[in-house]
Structure formats: structure tokens, C-alpha cells
Amino acid sequence: MKISVIIPAYNRVATLARAIDSVLQQSYSADEIIVVDDGSSDATSEVAKMYDEVSLLRQKNMGVSSARNNGVMMASNDWIAFLDSDDTWHPEKLRQQVAYHQKNKNCKVSYTDEVWIRDEKEVAIPKKFQKPEKATFETCLSYCNIAPSSVLMQKKLFDSLGGFDESLEVCEDYDLWLRILKEEEIALVDQKLVNKYGGADDQLSMKHWGMDRFRVKALEKHLDTAFDSLVREELLHKYALLAEGARKYQKEDDVFLYEARIEQLKAGF
Image (cartoon, rainbow, N blue to C red; front, side):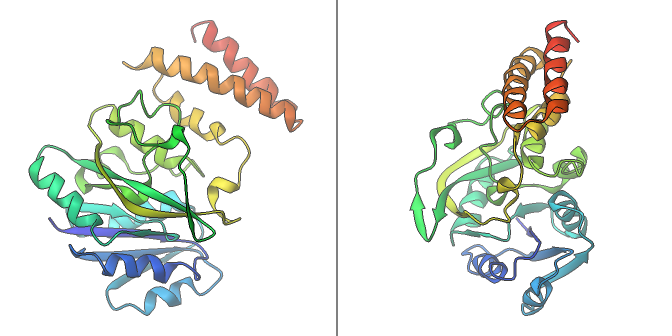
């Protein structure tokens, strides 16, 4: 299996080399490493240029979804893996996933378990984010339990789905996994093969109140499908939480919006 690794980066001069090094240290070598500098104002691109093994794409700041999508467009191999520029891989990460796919020829996507690190110490992963034995549309409805940095997938499948939704500033991964899970299995390679480093103020997950605002946009795509009843139930729950959060932040327009959507769903729309 030939693999292209896509690393989106925005102002990651402090962590990008660590991420790239973890790819180069794989016991099963990637065939291509593509770093997409998403309009950084620091020396992120200069770090990427230090590596002969890295192909660099520079673009104006258009967000992580655009960066990943454009990186995949550059990829020349049949399999793609994603790595966030502030994460790292265990040296056996690719080898273990390749071995799984070689034994399970029909599986087009896999992901792994992970370690969470904060202030250089491993921390416990909250129960709601722990990996289910099997990733299904239903088990992934509430939260995204599949880290992009853990995913290995067929490029053909990614292309057929149109990639990440560039209109979503965050939760773009949640959106893509749900779209995949409508048709395909996402298999868990049940080993902790990714290190996720948390706590930075500029991480997207730290940037927004009410992350469910973006999840509901992803969920609304699946109304009037075979998963309609599950989606409506989850939307009602998330709309209620968002309305409550909007009251807390005194965002009256959002309160009105989510209460109106609750009434629309209850009315069958």
C-alpha cells in the first residue's frame, strides 16, 4: 500500500517539525508527505522546507478543511492519512493499519485509539470520547470519536464524497465521518497510536462557544434519509442545549433560531 500523508498547518512553527518527524520515524514508511501551509504568518513554511521528504503547498488562509482537501488533490497515492500539525504518531501507526487493511480487503477506512497529553502528561480520556467497539452512524451521532490524525482511508472514497465541507470552520471531521458511515464501515485498530496534545489557546476546539452549532449543520444533511428518526432525536437534544447556551451568552437571535428549529422538528419539518 502506498500512502500520502496530509499535514495542514497554520502558525505551527513550534510543533510542525515534531509532527513531520513522527511520520519519518514510521516503521512502515509513507510514500509522500504533503504539508499545506494555510496562510501562516510565522515560519511554518520554513520548517517544512527543511525536509527534503516534504512537499509544501502554500495557500491563503482558508481553513483546515480547504487545507486538507487541497492536500489530497496533490496526493499521488491510492491511500491517504491525515496528521494534524500539533499531533504525533506512534512509530507503528501506519504498519498496524496497513496490516489491518491487508487482512480486510473490503475495508476502505480505519482509525486508531489515541493518547491525550496536556502539559507533557498523559490525561484520562472522558468516557464520552472513548472509542466504541464499532464505529456506526448511531454511535458517532453525539460526538466525534474519530480523530483525523488517526484515519487512513482510500483516496477514491474521499474524492467520491467531495472531501471535507469547507463551510464548516470546525466539526468538519464529524461531518465527513457521518457521511462515510452512511455507506461504509470505519474500522477501529484498537491500539493507542496517536498522541494528541491539548490545551493550546489557538486550537479550533478552544475557539468557539457551542461546538454543537457546527454539529447540527452536519446533522441536518441527514434529515429525510434512512437515519431520519435518529437524526431528529439528536437534533432536538442539541437544539435545546444550544438555546440554553445562547441564553447564557445573551445571544437572543440564537435563542430564537434554535427554539424555532425545535418547533419545526416537532411539527414534522
